[in-house]
Figure 1 (tube, rainbow, N blue to C red):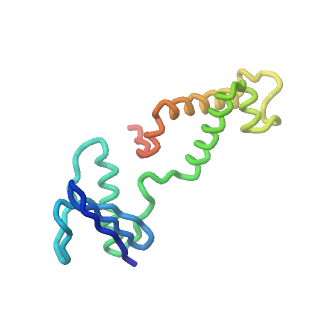
Figure 2: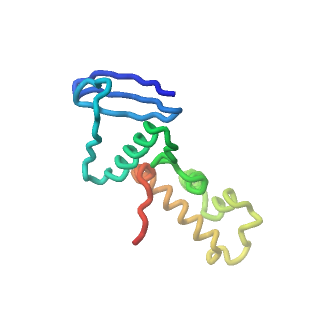
Figure 3: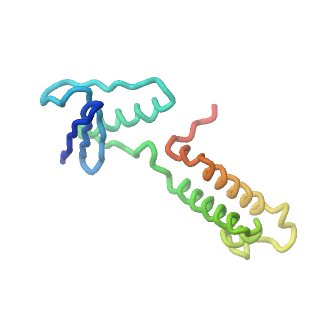
Length: 151
């Protein structure tokens, strides 16, 4: 199923196509013409990988093939970790100690009464809070970019 909208703007033509419930956005210099051949122009900048992925997904959709996951879509594990990060950040901004935050996140039974400073949950809680502060300071933009593989 194909549906769409076309709008003219001062910088060209903006096309919104919906192919089988996946939304694709295009920008054209000239008005679209039926039966014309089109090429994707990709700039070799830091967003190249994202644009190339979008172009491939669009091509797959046009050819009736499965498009796969969107580039910016978070895995369930990453989404769960981000929920913990935001909860930990909220706790720290409220003035709670790392121990209190850990008890709220993981339950009091998982937090040892003694040796708290050397417990893994202590270090994990600190990392969650630090990640939250990094996101708050503008690092949230990194969520839109795919994690780079370490080489």
